[in-house]
Length: 625
Figure (cartoon, rainbow, N blue to C red):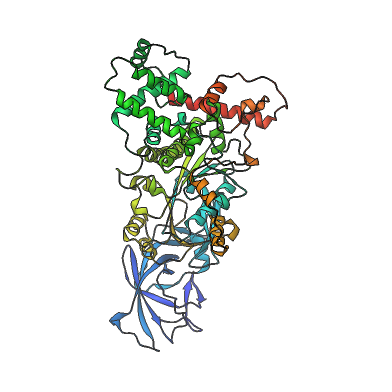
């Protein structure tokens, strides 16, 4: 053991090289790591943290240098000499090796071609080797922060590998997950400007983080018609999140199909016709996204109650009718039940949510906090299902990225918990999405409560601070190759730090995310509003509170970047987005639009409209098949 000073050195390529680094020597080695003997004290010029846990060191092995992570430091004999020299045993886990090419350049490889021998020199890794280890040479490489090991070395990721193989960000509350999401999404859309990003935002916090890139959607400015829901999603809504009655569900399945067929021209004027339609299944099913009217569905219930042989069904029919009438009259559900059109409404909803045309804002933050709790699962299911189906129907020309915040709500580890259609829609993106251009980002503070199959499909993981042992074990099991001991730091790393590993990284790394300007922090406006409440004079408007509790309709302004033209408005008959009763909706459903062309459309607008129409037609054909 020696301290390299003025008279010490080593030979590299036959030449004597002077060093100024503290050195240790390998005293034990196996295929996974080594033990290095080093000196600490007055005879060593090393800093106190030179051989600290978490530091990277390099060990000479021929012309190459084996890279290791310090995972444990011991003092032999358990005796520390205060003010004197002390011997340290440094336990190192191998990560790979830095290879010197014939042209003198260095490259990093995760495998080790030659292991160090006893007596091999070990020292803190040099900055050039750090740069070689974490270098990303692809065109989609971007920097998201710096290495915790050395703040002068940028932390690079491959955007292509990050999104195409799905990713996850996990960490306890308050460590900076939302800020990390915001930073990553800004890097992603800068590299992939044609990508459409949908954020399932349960706390309404991301709109303030993307004032220039996102459009916020909530129940006040979107119409998501109930007929776009599949039967299981629709049942979850009308049964208010509870398990549906099997008899009522069977009746609902039959009558929803008939209502869809009726909108396609089927006539149902007698009991005989009704029985024949129930027996004769046509191409339209209860899940096909064909528009139908709620009054038609209620009329079919009344008609079925009038049948002579429906005595046993009548209690279930009355109950089902009461559910439909109750939920359609609830002002909280107006965005779903007070819609004003058929296929055109579907086209507008898809265009707004998935940014077609994009208008310079590729991100949609779908704010779930204001939705009735009974409908959140169904809405999440519809959005995730549409994200996959649209990418599939567009044959990859429209790529989507779904950011699932608080993912443990939708894909819990318990197979009996959560809403099965939502789990199924997210699992489909995770398993098949990258083939068609639909990608997934999973955000959670409880990785131990996530569906293990879906989490395993996320091939790039940012693990921030985690205190739960179960959560730490899951991350440790996910780290491939070396760096298993990195999971040991999860309980103590600082805010904005993460252990990052997977396809998007050249090797597992401990990084610190870039500092985000305060005005771009997610949820900043909400935090400021809450703080200002503490400083206020204490005056509270009870009327405003009661009005919001009663879910009175509030006006909302359409974002200028989101003016998506519909067919009627193009011909001089703009459709009002205010909610109307069923009678006015019925009238408009069958009212022909006056053909009065006005201002000529631009070529870009025409192409966007044609593309959207093709997508909807293709989507409906796929669903019918």
